[in-house]
Structure formats: structure tokens, C-alpha cells
Picture (tube, rainbow, N blue to C red):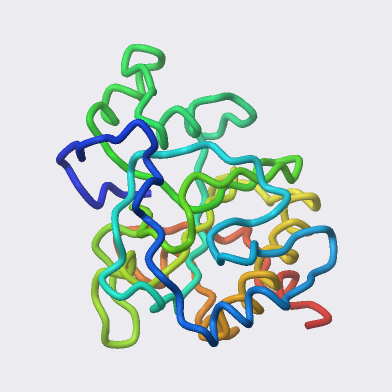
Length: 220
């Protein structure tokens, strides 16, 4: 991910407090009635993915238009690069990464980033930011005539890299999550599920050449 902000926001004791603007009746109805396979579904208030472990990130703010959630961006991350299963990604998204913990981490000192969701190699699902809030995942970005994709998107980080396939457990979980989000947020059509490289071409390459888009949409 790329830093969307360099400044550190003022932190409340509860970073999610006051970050839940009212939703439209149509969207609330859509969210309330949705049911999904695999035990993955969006909560009635539209903020949470049921079944995900919640870890609060302070790196978010309010969307300019609360109900404008119309893009899903898929990323890949590993910290240090090509190393999986450690705590570094969670520490980065919660501003607890020790810059001295690894030579690579020094360049991340002061970086403030997050994603709404993180899917680990074994399929574990973690949510850092409620969907009604703007997570800082896209950085400088553009999609179909609009800049600042953070304003209107949901960001999903997959634990991975450009150099190896994602696991079957990750892809199975991602398929469930995408189906749940599309049902809850109907503006996220198939054509509006994209990679970070699609909204920041030349700057970003993730989710990379090993990401299997055909597998994501198989039988859909």
C-alpha cells in the first residue's frame, strides 16, 4: 500500500467512534437482507464483515459522501518482502511497526496506511476499518474519470507478493468476501473490482501476475 497521508491524525481512545455516518434506506435494506455462503456476510449496519477478526486501525477518516462505495481494490503485501505469517502487516496498519525490527522497516517509519480487510495465507480474515470510513490504502490513484480512489472504495490486502501464487485458502476466502461486499454494496459490479495496479498504473504492480482473476470469478 501507499501512504495517503503523511500527518498523524488525532487519535480518539476509540478510533472508530463518530466514523459511522447514516446510510441510505436502500443500502441499509440491502445489507440487512443479505446472506452469504461460508459464513461471510456484512453486518446490518453495513460496517463490518461478520466472521472477521476486528483490529482497530487509527489510519482512516470520513468519506466525502458516506454512501458512495462503488469500487473494490485488491492489493498484495508482505512484510518483510516475501515473508509471511508474522505480525508486521498488522503492526504497520496500527502504527506499531518498529523501524529497527528489520532493515526494510526503516523506510516505513512515519508511514500511515491501512486497508479495510486483510486476508492471510491460511484464509484468516482481519478487518481494520469499518466500511463506512475511508481507509488509507490506494494513495495517488485514478479510476474512470475519478481521482482519490480511497474516497469511494473498499481496500482488501492479500498476504502475498508479485512472485508467488496466492493460496487456495486465500482465494476461497476472497471469493466469499467479494460476493458479500457486492451484495451489500450493489455499485461494486464485476467491472469495478480491480487491482491496485489498475488504479495506480506505473506506480503499483499488485496484486501481481500470480493473481488469478479467472479463479476469482469462476462459477459466478
